[in-house]
Image (cartoon, rainbow, N blue to C red):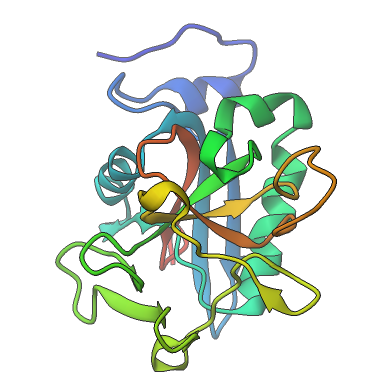
Amino acid sequence: MMDIKWIPTLATLFLVSFPTAAQAWSAKLTVDLSSEKKTYLLYKEAKSYQQARELAESENIDGVSGYLLNIDSSSENTRVFNWLAANISTSEYGSTAASDGGGAAYIWLGGDDQDVEGDWLWQRTDVSGYPRLYWRGDYGGAGQGLYKNWGNTEGTQNEPDDYQGNQDAVAIALEAWPVDAGFELGTAGQWNDVNVNNGLFYVVEFDTVEGS
């Protein structure tokens, strides 16, 4: 059954003509280079971490499965953050906020430390090389030399802090946190650990571009 509620243009018809099990994506970013092919789809539907992972992995482009956004470099972090900032208005921040993340707005990333506290792993189901360690808190370094961008101020890393003892998933911030507190633990574009039960927007990443 298709969910077609609002059809002002032909383009919108394409976007909303999807099964009702999943909301249509709101923005799309493609990188089509000889050295890199990526597609990112933004979903402005608040989901828990596990829901977002499952929805992301249920999608595909030309048979290539999607996954909840992983960020592997500073350039990718900048690229994705700038795209998110251009496509999510501040009036929408309340719909993707984490109360335990200083009340700031976030987007889920596909990483967690649910198996072992402090061992942060990028997650992709049934994919060789995953789960993949990118940060281990007990030595404060990047697991296997992988990129990380935890919240920090003036060079002091403040996150992940497992506040309240139940922050086991990572999200990228759309604004500084904590909001209106007079101090900062992290700023827009940096990462924070938050409770997996928060309802946040999410991005599905694909290692391909349609038709390529």
